[in-house]
Image (cartoon, rainbow, N blue to C red; front, side):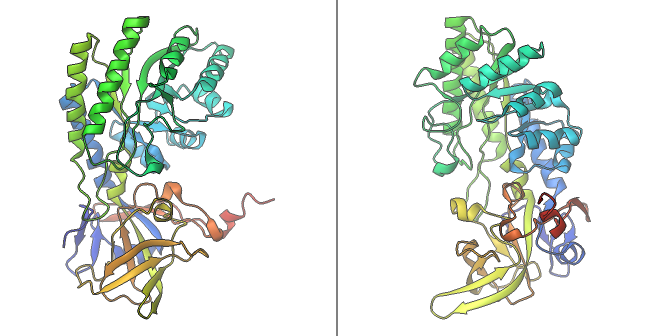
Length: 433
């Protein structure tokens, strides 16, 4: 049977395995629900991008892991070992990365509403770049840098006006977006013009991110062309030498069999061609290229393991299969209508004779993980795995209904270990006064 995750295999006893570890054994040792991540798959995905950056840009660039996809100390350790940079979007992500020992100079700090405290943390820890979102932030950054007698290097987040053909909640490059400054209105030009005169701001680059879960190369190529034209204009009009171009991420992954993602290195290859052509046409130096894959590094390396509690058949209507997790550990279906596939780890190749809705245990009618899932006959006590949950599950998890968040189990070469422990009821009341 073909799974949407390449790192899965059926073992000799017919039990589904990830990273050489039986999911039955993982459930026995670590209990459910649990996130399970294949370390080798994460590293393999990093290496695809790193090789492509070397091949198509001659190493004149850096791959930044978009850590909002999954942020924990172990992920940052892996990224450091693989030679990746990272981007962070909050003080919490920055703190976690620093606690893991990630080098601050390879951290790019994003966010559309950074607080004073977050900017101070970034400045005092010497992060490599701050990606400025708006004029209010720029003015605050200049003031805080001046107070510390620092010069800080920045990129500006630009809205290039590109339609990414994705869910409206995760489109970020169009003019009607909370992120960045728009090209169409002249706002982007104006903020760069002002920044070039600020004594504590070093304008090194521009940034765009057009959306997420994109299966088409053309929007990325158009974004690259638009951004290179902006770089050319800044040089011609203001003499500005833009050294870095960050083209964001958003590369789609395979959640269900119908998804048709592009090979990840093809994004870099396609965009590299545009950057080279535009550099020559516009007579500007080819910039140092940055890209920000997140989902495509961790999503297909992870699954969520549950135990079935109740199978409830409503005759002629629907059969609900309720598991011991739900929207608290994966809110993406209720937020975006995201689709997933599920499998029974102890019967992964069985005939899929049942059509069921996989529901969670939260006191919420919308607490659904998958509608109309095809499964073999399922009964209470069975293990159930929802696939490709490595991104935007743990990072978006909540304690709704005061349910503790699951652990992250990292597997590698037949061995499983804790990366993040399971929350306890004591953790839930730790901040209560």
